[in-house]
Amino acid sequence: MRNLYFKKDSERGVNGTYNWLVDEVGELGDELRKGTDKEATEKEFADVIAWLVSLANLMEIDLERAALNKYNNKCPKCQQTPCRCPF
Amino acid sequence: MRNLYFKKDSERGVNGTYNWLVDEVGELGDELRKGTDKEATEKEFADVIAWLVSLANLMEIDLERAALNKYNNKCPKCQQTPCRCPF
Image (cartoon, rainbow over all chains, first blue to last red; front, side):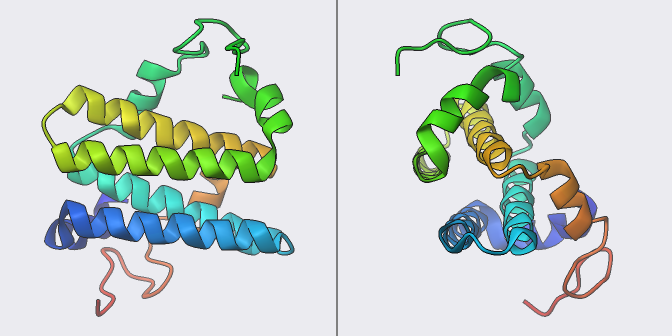
C-alpha cells in the first residue's frame, strides 16, 4: 500500500486522507444496509482497510503492530479470552 | 479477534457493530486532530482495525484476502504501481 499510494497520500495530507477514510466507511455502511452483494461488500471492506493503512503510513504507525500491542488474544479491558466485559 | 469477540459481536449484530466502528473512526479523528500523543493514536488505530475485523468476521469476509484481491500491489483503477490516477 505504501508503494502504491504513499506519494499521493503525503500530498493529500492527514486530514484529507482521514476524510477519505470516513467516506469509505460510509460506503461500507451503505453496502451492508443493502446486504445483497457479497463481492461488492468485500470490495468496500478492502477500501476501508486500504485508507486506514494509508493513514497509518502517513502517521508512521505500523497498523499490525498497533493491533497486536493492544489486542494480543486478550481483551485489553477485562484481560480475558474470550472477552467477558459486562457490556 | 474472532476468539476474543465473535460471540459478543454476533449478539450485537451487524448494525450495532458497524455503529461501534463509526464511533471508533470518530475517536481516531479526534486523536489525529489533537496530534500530540503517538501512543494514544496507535491505540485508536488498533480500535478501528479491531472493529473492522469484528464486522468482517460477522459478514464471513476475510479482510486480508479482500484487500489483496482488490489491491495486489497495483492500483485497481489505473492498474499501475505507484498509482497514477489523475486525482
